[in-house]
Length: 89
Image (cartoon, rainbow, N blue to C red; front, side, top):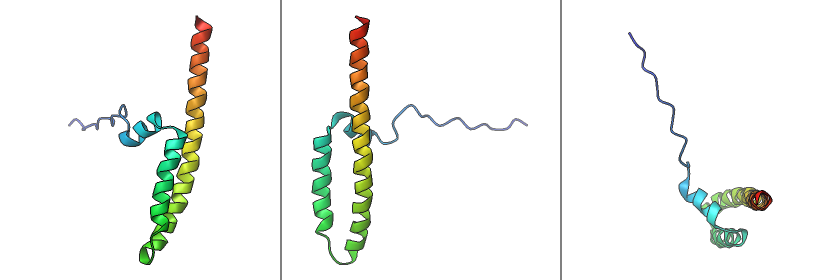
């Protein structure tokens, strides 16, 4: 009796296409604007939702830091790619 084998999951597509597209197309200033608008709305919450909003604000701060690092890496890689293209010519 032959055992069934599961096919490996298809990892060729992005897991979060909207997030990936935003990171690829946006710049640090547009990301900061987006976060600022969202933070203002979360800070305006009161009552029972304020505790949850505080947790979200903490998480957003961490995400901002990681996103900043991603932008730095992207800029560095783009610069290196341009540099290597110029060297080959």
